[in-house]
Image 1 (cartoon, rainbow, N blue to C red):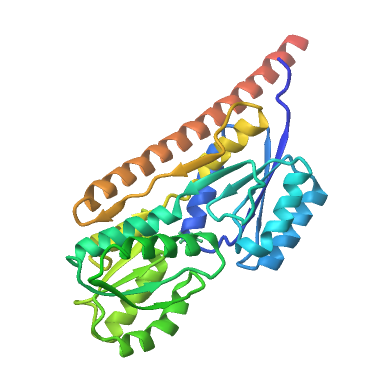
Image 2: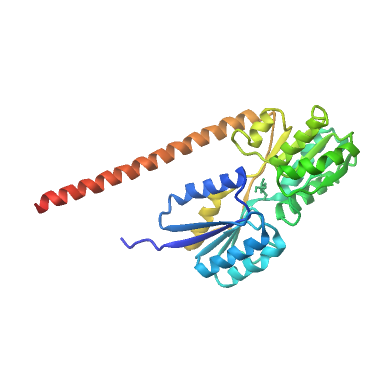
Amino acid sequence: PAAKPRYTIGFSQCTNGDAWRQAMLAGMKKELSFYPEVDFHMKDAKYSSTLQQEQIKEFLEEGIDLLIVSANEAEPVTPIIEEVYNRGIPVVILDRRTTSKLYTAYVGGNNEEVGHTAGNYVANLLKQKGRVVEVLGAPGSSPAVDRHLGFEQALAAYPGIQKVAQINSNWERPSVLERLPAVLRAQPNVDLIFAHNDRLALGAYQVCKQLGMQRRVKIVGVDGLPGSRGGIQLVQDGILTATLLYSPGGEEAIRTAMRILSKQPYDKENILSTMVIDSTNVLTMKMQTEKLASQQQDIQRQQQLLLQQRATYASQQTVLYVLAAA
Ligand code: FRU
């Protein structure tokens, strides 16, 4: 049979420094194990849009057949991504969008819906009356912009819910530890904090605890990762009242990339769904994600075994060949 064509995929990641991005990469690698004909290269922009621009330029110089990209900030990274697209190289946008329509496919959540779902949940939780603080993700990154938009739109339907303050962050916990205390000192009657991810939500909890408010203030996050420090565990431990599921989508991104590369039909918009995880369903979620993790380990073990058997078979073939030649 003809050898499969070799492909090079470049992955420009805005940061690889947190568990959510690492789960994304693990998902990609798992899916890539089915495509040994693919060379996969990741460049980590470490939260710098300038570095990300340079790294995408490097990909262009090195030569790639497809670009997967999570844009650190939408505006500054858009022109170079458009250039890739205009050179005829397919572009898969993963999770963080650009400001342009020039891309081949999008894979990720609908962040406006995430914010909207959070807003309705929060309003019902507070029985349509209460004071809310919002902790946003990094300014200019599309999930922060869209989650904020959706949250505001949902709350607009509940006149009894007051947004008393909002703060920006850089998506990481230290920025909340730094900025939230002053806000909560000025607004001691806050009922609930909605944070744009679970790391920020955990930071908000720590601030509330420092101020002795953790029993009264409810906290809602986003991501819902499995694992010991993940959002599912934080909900189970009662640290968060709820989290909105936001899947990293690594597997789906590779699947879409492979469809594009092998000229199979694909969808331009591949939206991963969200849901509220709270005390009513957290145990089910936990059991399901644990089961999935153990099944994935089984698959990896089977792959290892297959590789070993192939190696053994190859060496036996050599022995047979040597014996026949003797
Ligand atoms: C991970 C992360 C997630 C968040 C997503 C938004 O780097 O900060 O926590 O949901 O990025 O792009």
